[in-house]
Length: 117
Image (cartoon, rainbow, N blue to C red; front, side, top):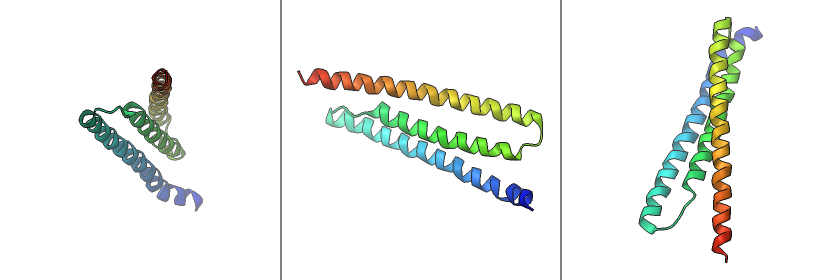
């Protein structure tokens, strides 16, 4: 009974979580695009890379969570290999985005500190 319930509802749950990740990445991209054009028009610096990196990292976290939920429904070892590779790639992307974000924030802090003198 519980197995049937899980097999029925889990695809909808992880599908919704994946959609949340896609929406977060989409809205973050639109916001970064808007900030880019605003910086061109107003000649003012905005944290475009930080905004985009935050959205990408959060969106990938949602997508990775959905992939982890998919492991409940796996029946064959070949599916585990594919899913493991997907999770590994998304984890590496998230880690790279995290390091990029930290470097950009540090660079922004140094520039703000230099502007105070």
